[in-house]
Length: 390
Ligand SMILES: Cc1ncc(COP(=O)(O)O)c(C=O)c1O
Image (cartoon, rainbow, N blue to C red; front, side):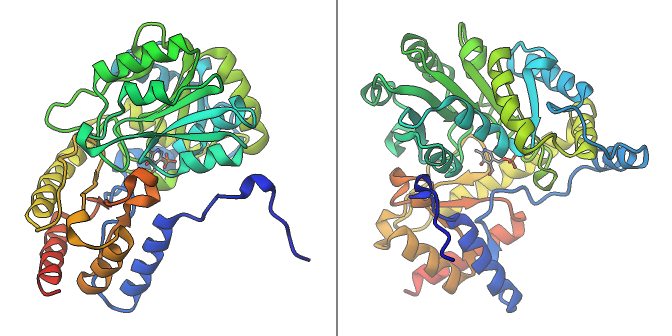
């Protein structure tokens, strides 16, 4: 029997990031030394005290379903964190603990968008957002983040793209793949626009702890009048190196949470019980592990930006957040796909073509500095050499 996909699946492509990752892993298994800069996950182990808390939870018998939105202590810890770090006031009932920020960011899309509604999405951005929008039959409208504007959204673009059908805006700051952090004045303009046009804002802040050079992370939900129309998405994956734990959250006004909870309870039931206890320890325990990782990322960031900018034909904006660089490679005379293949085959360095993150990513590559300093250094030397002997 030929199984027919639903019409709304048209346009949903398998992840191109995973394609490069799988190819890089295959080459590594054949004995080639690969510097793998294509996947967005910290290379550190999860801090020991967090692992111990999850082990303890298992030993203490926390092996059953938890309440649908998550254990009360964890939701309270999230609410406390949002107040202390982000100036966002929510109660523990206004938080759903999810299976990663991935689920947390899909919940608003499936809960609040009707087919044909327009959702404005940063471009370039983590591709998840384009495909979630398509999966629910919404129209995805691309809001360009241009290099000449420091990869920040421009309110003139936002206004020009607004129609009576604009229902939702999804923001991601610090941004994957550009590393841009949206400053307060930019978010203030967007907040004014959202209020004027009655738009719901989803703010994905998963990289908030990874900011550099004293950059301020601003949560749009903390701006006047925005708490009632913003859903803040975050999680443990990047700050605590817990990508495999699959733990995240969405926080926002009660009626929105109640709506999203219906989908969450019928699909996921609850996030993994013992992982939630690890998440609790992460928030309540010592935070020096986060700062240590941030400092190491910062060292690598400086190395890779300098190495990229020293290559003829490559121009790399210094990112202020996350753990990605997004160099412009138009001067190399190769498409991003050709450049990625060349770097992988000739230098053993794996990166992702910019168009994987949206059409405004054409002419760019994304490199995650989530390999060790020494490996990145070796990879960048090999890359410069391979380009020199073309
Ligand atoms: C912007 C952004 N949001 C969310 C996620 C997924 O986070 P999680 O592992 O918590 O599902 C990623 C992963 O790369 C990401 O880049």
